[in-house]
Length: 382
Ligand SMILES: [Zn+2]
Picture 1 (cartoon, rainbow, N blue to C red):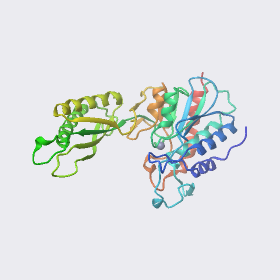
Picture 2: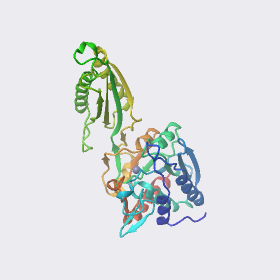
Picture 3: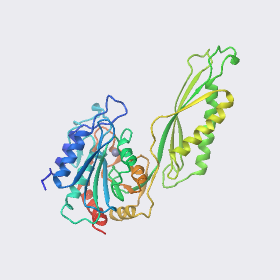
Picture 4: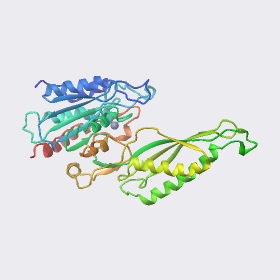
């Protein structure tokens, strides 16, 4: 076993490697240098490692010790969001300590966790594990979630239990909402405004669509409630509309963008089908053509049962009740492979995606101890 750098140096090295993912190509970078760095450390520690290509120049890393199928996965994403240099007081790519804080892009969300997971796992290298311990590092969480989608598509289930170390201030999270975004375009026929019969007005048609969406939203809110969430109902937001070009021309085309947020138990596909059906039923009789387009692939709602082993363990060891959050994570994709997942990590989501992102140095050691307890409870037991 070769030695690896001390924890703060590992974090510093990870922060120094740019790994921005963005749906805007000019900001998007490969995460290969991050993956190679992590793989080298884990190889040196005696882990078996496998690099799984995700999409062009993007990779996931699986690294494991031990054999049993019912093991534990510690997972983190390798990418960060893009950053605005003008808001930063320090270099985002240089981890810098100021009093109790470590500043840098990805300190909270979530490069520190990957280093912490390695540090915690070090203790178990020479132990005889009954169940496998796996560290997973994924690509593109901040943009398309393609990294974890690839693992789910290939059914690369790396264990039975999973802790995703997103910043939750070390509170276990077992639920979040799902989301999908849809573009709805109505096509009518242009004509001179002086005679409505000369065309077919797509903007007038959109009024009917908006009414139907309002009805749909109310029905969903009546049908589904979950008081574990601050907003306990599914939401449907009207976010963008554009139609027509001239006040004296009948509007031939109108486009609307909506965002739907689902509670656990609601399925994206079912809801999307229902949305399409309701709208086409209303617009068909008006003689308007309707086209739907998914604005991104959507993230399913996430729920791990309150009485599952990983929820029970993490809530006992942290002394905190499991909660729900408003942000989406890779957790539903791990659960779709038949795993039991909690989101639990150091740092606060309030610092994520912000200039001057930091993690409290005092949270590092407790996280290592916590992970070691969880590893012990799952991987040292038959
Ligand atoms: Zn994150």
